[in-house]
Image (tube, rainbow, N blue to C red):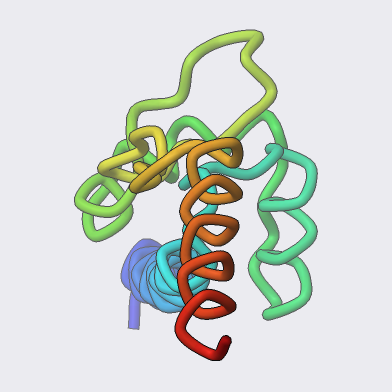
Length: 115
């Protein structure tokens, strides 16, 4: 086996492990209706926790390769965040004030029915 074959195979395995943990973080963000992004430092720490040697220097290169390029937006310099694909504002059905008004009106209606 040539050294470049070993390096390519290790790099591909690292990308696949990063893709798996990235998909997990995307699913968690969707479940919690959170912004689909995280700080670069937190992403690097998550990568290191699964044994991938990721640094600020090679973060952009790794994100530009598949399968990560299908899951993450291109890295913006000096932004300090890693954005997942589809990073949009979580939509809420109504504001807090509207929700409180609906609850109050329903409570008053229920009280009137009980009397």
